[in-house]
Length: 260
Image (cartoon, rainbow, N blue to C red; front, side, top):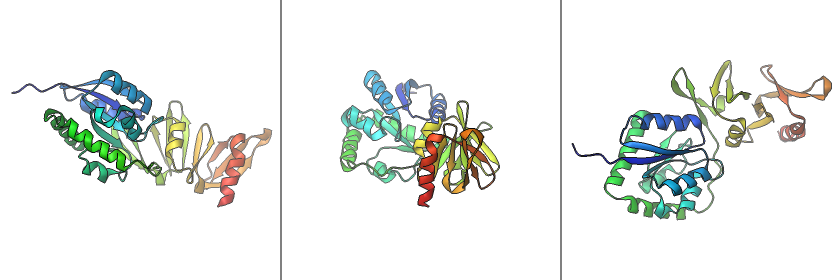
């Protein structure tokens, strides 16, 4: 059996669960060594420049820089073989296919991951990286205009050791719980290891509103603004749930709701 080339990989994704998912899948292949993980675009650029990996798993939407901006910063001609990762199944996927660049849509299954990895390894073994990067340069030039802002339409969560998806359209409100955020869907609650600030940035602001550092609510679920004793504020949702409303956000919420 011929020797299998050891591949050095970098995983760049701002979602901890997504990074862990890729790490767990790569752990099954002893010929792949993870040399770094990155939770932001700038950190990804630093890791790629410093370590020169063979393979990069690159999230499209990250703090600081998008995946496209990471590629532009490195230079497409210098990029390792790249597997794009996205939560948006309509985000330029046809362009990726045309350019023979692979992608994974969250949440992806083991089989889809294996296919993408096999394709990446074949590209490296056939020394086709130069051809692929030339196609990537073309893709970037064709996509030079800023893409329309994409917001989450589903959120992957881990429940009882399994990954499942919560449609954003079903979420009533979100609350902070330590290092987790809790997604409230009717009478169910799902924990996700994500900062409230990160979730706020990924949710459509015409649909969701940050009430307080510990609460985000769907605007069409808000029934009334309340004023408690002591000058504190709150909102009551249509199901009777009351959530805190910070003073600094009260006027903005009244303005937004007034538009409706």
